[in-house]
Structures are given as C-alpha cells and as structure tokens.
Image (tube, rainbow, N blue to C red; front, top):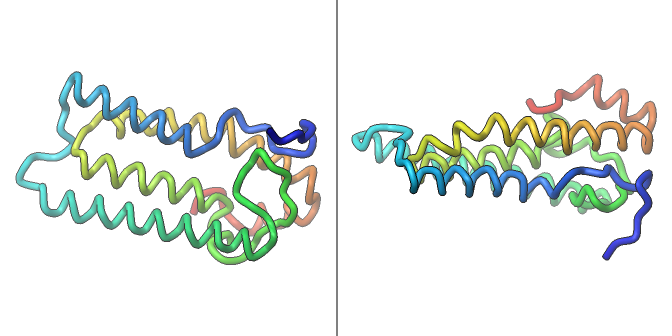
Length: 160
C-alpha cells in the first residue's frame, strides 16, 4: 500500500482503466440481457475493420504515452506523485492521451461486439473521467507545477 498524503497525489476517485472497464462491462452485460445491435449485420466487415483499427490506434497511443512518461521519469498512475511535467510525445497534442487511448479501445470493442449499450453508457463514463479524474488531476498538477502547467494548459487542449 502506498502512503502518500492527499496533497502529494491527484486524489482521483478510481483508477481510470477501471472506470472505462466498468462502463464497458455493464454495457456488454446489458447487451446480453437486451440485445440492441449498433450496426446492421451487412456492415460486419467495415465494423470489424473499424473496431480493430480503433483498438490498435488506442493501444499504440496509450503505449506511446506511457513510454513518454517513463522516459521523463514519471508514471501514469494518478495515485502516485507526479515527478515531472510531461509535455512532449503525444502530450504535445492532448493533455490526456491515455484517456483518449482508453476511449478509442472502448469504442473499438463496442464495434467488434456490435452492441449499442456501451456506446449509450460512454457519455456517463466520460463524465466520471472528467469530474472524478481529469479535473482532480488538473488541480493537482497546477498546485505541483504552477505556472509551467498553466502555460501547458493554454497551449494544449484537454482532449484533442
């Protein structure tokens, strides 16, 4: 167990991958109980291609973001203190490339499973990510890195 005080970490409500997984699993379970196809059967080929592409792109982006953070000497776990402000790699384009990557993977799985329910739950997942994770991380990073983080916020958008 890590023993960090509240001001040393972002204080997110839950690990972000678990938030995405909860929405996805709930959506898939709802899809089993009350099937609702996202696209018609004739769209199987394009749907699978798009789903696979989203999973690959999301995985690649997430891997690039984690690698960039490791190179900077910090990590992606919001329950550990940030040791560096990472502004290069994918962080040049998005302040939250890992959450963008998780969203892409979530959408890719939704397409591969061809069920509407996870898509309907995605706005709730993103609202929890925004309020329970991103806004808390931003307050923490502003207190930790001050004007450097404020300048970064002004330069780089939250998502894309």
